[in-house]
Amino acid sequence: MKVTVVIAGRVPGPELFPRERTADRSLNLTSVKVHELSRRDARRIAVRAQLLDRRRPTSLLDVVRHLTLLQIDLTAAVAPSADLVVWSRLGPSYDPAELASALDEQTLVELRGMIRPWEDLALYRAEMAAWWERTGLTDWEEDQREWVQANEACRRDILERLEIDGPLPLSALPDTCHVPWKSSGWNDDRNVSMLLGLMVRSGEVAVAGRDGRERLWDLAVRVYPDEFVPEDSALRTRNERRLRALGIARARGPECSVEPSDSGDVGEPAVVEGVKGVWRVDPTQLGQPFAGRAALLSPFDRLVYDRKRILELFEFDYGLEMYKPAAKRRWGYYALPILYGDGLVGKLDATADRKARVFRVHAIHQDVPFTKATSAAVTREIKDLARWLDLELCLPA
Image (cartoon, rainbow, N blue to C red; front, side, top):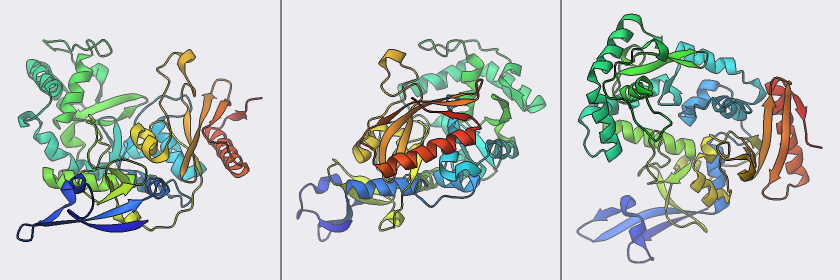
């Protein structure tokens, strides 16, 4: 791992680093420090930042506060994604009842399909409050805002009902929309559900808990902290926390409707050997020792969620295939990426058959041939997962 000081004009391509330049107009010089990383360096930074090295954390709240979020996906082919993410960090000591309890007590809360620490909501409230006046929205965002305005009466009906009787499930809220929601088909006529999602964006309503799998809705002022962090400061803090959780990320990435995969101009610039372009790296991760382990990951785990990033850094081809016809799947309905050390080495095609009380392993796909040490570590992890699920392990013949 090397550090290079670049002076504009002395190395090719300084235009790659526009945001990291420190300019002195009188001298017309531009300098920037760029970290030169191998792919292995970058992978180890990413794995360690995601709490997937050998030093396991010990607390659910510590995990979520560091990762900043758990993505909600209730598909339970193996286990709900949020539980899988926490189990892969804490190990067999993790009890999913801890997460349910934290949500009930609102030390953790749901925001737009993500579970976040309650105190982090202060970083989003200014952005929410500015939603109605915000300029520069995309066409589809403008359409959404206009649709809410066209259904002002229903919005007010929902707010009034929640003020009197909240928290309430979706089924208890009135659908008095004048203009129905239209989509390509998936969300047709789901008026109240879509309206609530947009009222979350404007900071009016919030998920206050769950009754089983069903969300309970309430006024946001009853759920969110009173504190507002100014929007510019909040955005930078969120970028800093995201980079600390990812370790290494692009400064700019594709538009994401909920959680970005990039980090803005926080951290320090880096280039990765064999990978085009510039990255941002958390400097506290540089030069740290690394000791890896095996881990089975949720398809929604932040280590693998950015498919382009894992292809560039880990040379790992992966996609969630549960929406594909069975004949077109390469790895399985809900294949779990397999981490070993600093490499993503394969996929586990397995299903939790709770009716038969069996954890069925259909296949272990090896992207690279497993060594004896890799096979032994992955097998231990599969056995640990079966025990954690309280199911009998059934391996392929």
